[in-house]
Image (cartoon, rainbow, N blue to C red; front, side, top):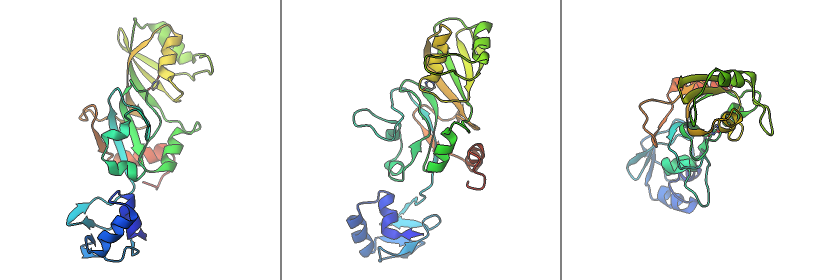
Length: 240
Ligand code: URA
């Protein structure tokens, strides 16, 4: 339960004074009935909301899959550069939907965003780090020695990368599955074996797989099954 005016402000309908005025003037209906008291407690998780006759999606918990294009920062906001949040309707930022982990500016593919801070935190915490699979194109041929080096774990300048799976799917393209998520991890792992990544694309994050029908730059909310699988990955059963 929460106050109607707070719900409306959180949804980005307007400032506190604007929404209070709107409510008092009868412009807001909850479950089909006009409510004119801005302080009325409402069941925000299930109530149907209309603002000036238009239905408004009032859910404050949302989970999003985004097919990230190159050229955007993975951040909730940035003073100078465009971010992945620019691809979503504004309401997602106002309800606190945030990217889980980061993809480099030039990396494309699966990005998961959620309003659930605990889910976000747990999916990234070192103890529970979920598997991620990337398709990497590199500047030279890949061979069995690279597969073995990835499987053995690589020594990078400031940390030892855990053993990772590399599958060669084309002479200069590999599918890499890692468990961790250090800064520039995939690029640095290839660099350590003498290959530079020329294109990087994420295909999976935990049990979430990038929807093939989602073009670059597009997003959709997760299905109930996808949400349940991610909560399970985060060992938060029963929260979905
Ligand atoms: N590893 C990288 O090097 N870059 C990414 O964007 C993700 C993983």
